[in-house]
Image: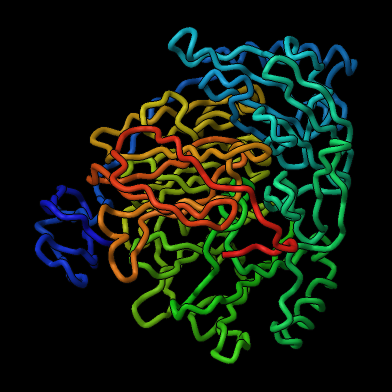
Length: 584
């Protein structure tokens, strides 16, 4: 990665940085490639380069549900539900399932939405951090005018965005087993049910303006698109998928996949054709950049096959030729056929795509070498990726020590396994913490105390805690990393009806990098539909430059943005019609 100038900082650590690219002071053109092998009886030095600093080990303070007041809320909720249900024993009678964070009342602090897969649905837990300076939560559901059963439940977890562009975050429920309601947020004071908006949809893909009217719509993947109508305040279902199967996929591959789906164990199997990675499972939608597996500038295709309850997993990696054809190059790239990709990203910082694959025996962390082939790295994360459960493992990335390398929190649903892995560089990951989580989607990553370090909330308890406590707890892991790097939090904002600038693309660069012929971004991410800021770890950089692709496609830049602050960023708009296709 590019280095902005100044002193190269060495940090003592128990690992070796093998290869890095830096731009040294006085070298105004080009990049200096260095291979660094520093080792003295197991002690090594890690080299800081352009915001990437390996060696700041992440640490957390654990705050239990008893300490935060959440356990008392859950105990009261459970007692009320058992009374209404006539005692325990009903199917889906008490099954905590998913967790979200959002600032529903715009007081500056993140509140929690805890959801069930079943009868109790959800409650809103209001943060009292602003009022007390402590991480305390109370049940705000009654004062918002709804019964918990009138809030959305979900087959996974509800989604949160501003339906009507009034600046207040609303809540949508999704299920293919029931018809959960959605809820309008009236000024942070009252929630009102909008009825059952999204029928037979359990796993949406992205919030985005699909028809160019400025209002946010819903990409439902293979099940089509839900387009918001501001007059009726409803979502109309168009069964046409936003992204059909690419015509260039070889017919023999399509036939193989269809035959595999017909096997008895593959009742729940789905095959996805990915031109862009899906970032954070159900949090950030599609990655802004197309998948380019071999760095030749042509968009490639990754095929992911997976399904619940024992269905086959598969992965295929198709390279695009100069004439536009897609060629299955899975074996040539050194990749397995029977593992499902869940992360397609550069997590080593060398500019090449890396992968995380899930399957017993063949899953793991796969990094790409200089020849373009992938090799598996044996480490704790690879071991986790081989523990197959009833559902596909989910991965959520964040930079917890602000060194510029993405760390990952992984969840193995229904097995209740949650773990944080710190990025050590070169595809190596170290497990930092482990928790016993709820059965589906219990992870939230956010800066809960505004100190510039990303925290974690997990529906569940630390590993080793009593099993029954898991269903009555949300545990906060407050980031206490010492000597964390610098950071920037960016809050993109635009005019109504898209006040959170959803669809805008934010790129962060080392100072001066934008002046180079081919500027290399340190970080790229889309604006968040739930209004939370984009968090960027800057390492030792004290400032950065930002490039923004606005809702109208206009590109603007902001220079010399100082580190260690929250930066409100105006985004141009409105969005332009694109016939439902994503422009990159």
